[in-house]
Image (tube, rainbow, N blue to C red; front, side):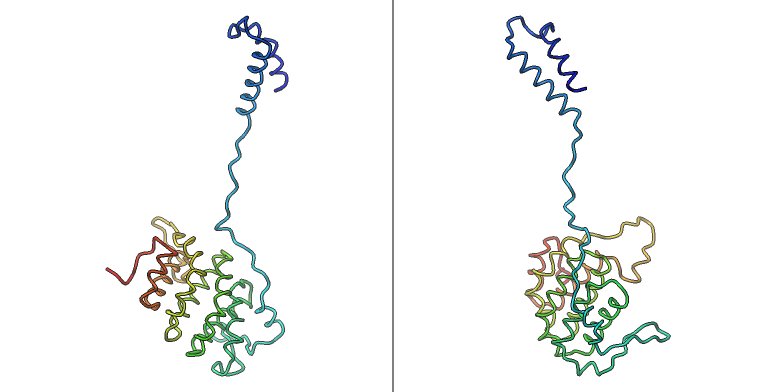
Length: 250
């Protein structure tokens, strides 16, 4: 159709009143080419650029937690009681080698399938409850698993990781201050999702009871970082998240 239209224009252009008798063949050819290009451009659909995918979930690679669990290397078992599921530890938690076990449980933060997700999450909280002074020396080994979990962009994984971070900064003396140098590694994802709140209008958000609103969890976590991170915490948070407002200053 386009070719036929162009040929008709080429034949009819010399007799058109818009074309002077002094026009050369090249003038007519130029007008014909221009009209063809205009027709093609007007009838060609414009496709926008692809989405950047900043909020798209990303698959996680197999980690050591699942490998060690399937091998039976963890001294844990699943215990059922009237309050729900809990971990039955086969040894005293205080006697565990935190340099070995705590990073492995943190690698399990990426898990979403049962029972891996439950054992990783509950195992971390149990070890943080009983770790005391053993946790601080292990902190550098926990940063990469935390960063990997946040980079999955999975809502469930991110919510679990936020709650773990809140527990981590309160698990021992100077933990919040020791975490400040690692803000540049873990806060970029915070900056992406900090405004991701549920807009329900006058509806009721039943997920508040379970604390699954990622935007609110990020705000809570940042405020705890500032409270427990010492005098340098706020400026480091502000550097990574410019829109953050201090919860300590009036």
